[in-house]
Image (cartoon, rainbow, N blue to C red; front, side):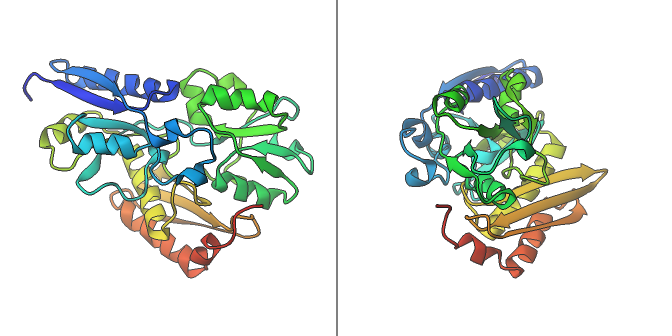
Length: 309
């Protein structure tokens, strides 16, 4: 690979920049002969923080502009939080590498209560995620939810300014920014399965860019790739978007993948949840097979039910 400048597209939030700087450090170590340059790009999700995610059309809202920049050659790779990626990428684009995964749990954050089990009936919880809302509504039908948009620090402040009993955020972002002391409890996976790809950073490139494939192969983390690809295959098959009440979590035991996934009614009245095992070498097949099982149990009908009041 000849001397050149590799441009990394990123959102401008503190977490996105942290993830991009991490990717830069790994890439510079893998290819010290190259020059790397971050390029900050504002996405639709960053620009429209005044209204709830579903109203903007959440599918790919944090990645669209980055993908367009990849397609027109403005950047050479895009750094994403994998949970923001739509299940189907733009034609001609692919995920060239995944970086080692952080904690996948959702974080329960409260000033009053030490755990989710202590929250009283009628509690008000801050989260705009239908995945979280549906699972927590299944846990306690009396809880209500308030949408909280913005970067992590903005959402943390809303715990106090909006007089909420608790807020739910992804643990990974808090840990990466050094704010793990704000986590009151890591939500048990039995209560709330994470989003597809949660805790993983994905590096997206042009499919026909052999040079970038060669570079990213040096930083790709195979265990993270296998688990995230299994989860993404599940999401793709059930046709769930970024905001659908769909959760999945894959783990590795030796060379075997164990995938657990759920599809819920928006109002939490029903949750379909199953697990399946398959070889690490065939993550797509595992995700697809588990999705077919849940679809056979009525998952598509659940996704079509009305959202929470």
